[in-house]
Length: 320
Image 1 (cartoon, one colour):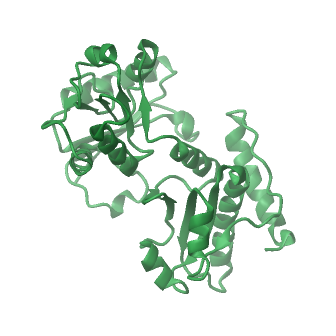
Image 2: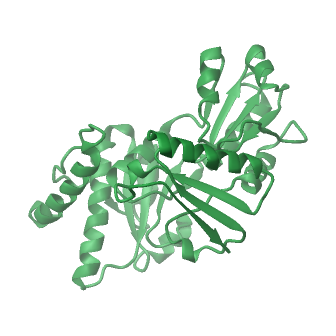
């Protein structure tokens, strides 16, 4: 890649990320012209997997002679180059796989959706479902580097856990890190990292406050005060994964029309820092709590601070 080919693209892209990041006061670097993203092939993919603690691989459609196709690919590649530059010292690599030219490699790696980015971490493959921007991707990968289970062993840590009401989360009480049941819990956590938060405690006092018995796990839905006790303890990794898959409720706002969804899905926009927005959000939370046993209802809250074009509290109900 020649640096001169990127001048216009870099300028446009940096204007966009500068606007987005200025609000947060973050300092995102400019592209330094060094190639870090690897074109993966059957000859070099094993070496790349060994070299990095985590390898992020984008399966992209073939780039044609059409200028629009080339520009789209170049912008996506620039996102990966910027993320690779920021994470260069973190042991995270980035690669590209052409869905047509490298079809055999894609099948071998389990890559089946064009435009998707897959992260190889140890024995797991995690698909990145976020917005394809450098800042969002970097944050996702940094979260993925953290331990899959966060340990809570003090009252202050428990208070922080209680305040995470917007997160889908699980917490279990185990004898210690060497417990076979904790290890099963940890293995299950790796299936959902970083989308579902897993916590554990080895402290009897913390477990008592949570109402947990040894080897028992509670499941919390967002904004729900009372957890669901996962039955039939102790659990295997497979049983925990199956339970979370059956009980997690979420909705993807991107390409919603492509999803085969049944039931009622409510999308609500409310600014939590605004008095009216806060009051509106409290009503929505109460609706969620009153209908927590309804498997056909999903509610998504979006803070307009993340979407500047949304100026007021709104609510949409989508029926399928």
